[in-house]
Image (cartoon, rainbow, N blue to C red):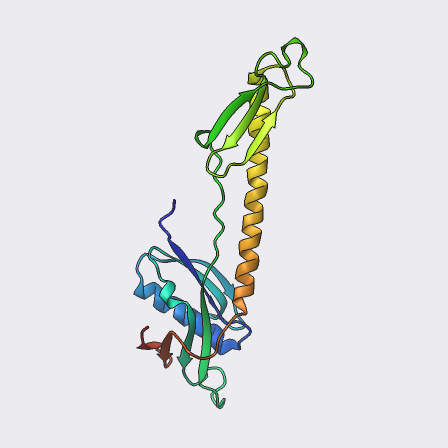
Length: 204
């Protein structure tokens, strides 16, 4: 288990460069406020130093930051622009938890197998079942008449099964986080920051 207990995704949604700058400023502010956190991923924005999204791993529960964050500031990119309110979405990021494969996590079971195997079929337990204890995933091998010879194929099949399962988890988590990137509420902010120095105005 890693030290991180939560990952937050900061997103500009489909907002303009000012929202992307707010993402960068919010990421820097949170990293200063919560020592020990770590930026895991940055998606560059339209301008240098701006980000469409940033993922930050924290070592504490920061779910109270979830929601929209408001930045009140005159646009540094469009000084004559009348708009002064920019919003960033903060959401708890879904992180895939891959199942680790190690022999210590595998239970080997033997059983009597049918099919090929000569005189030992149905008389001795030549089949091998490899069970991943934490997930319940299992794979079997009955291709030979020897337990020892069936052991490695069962382990290889289990490893391949877990790899496929882990790839699916990563894909699902990525799809969830991409969808969250565009979910942004402009109003009812959990925090408000002001000015180019990004000074915190209110706390939840």
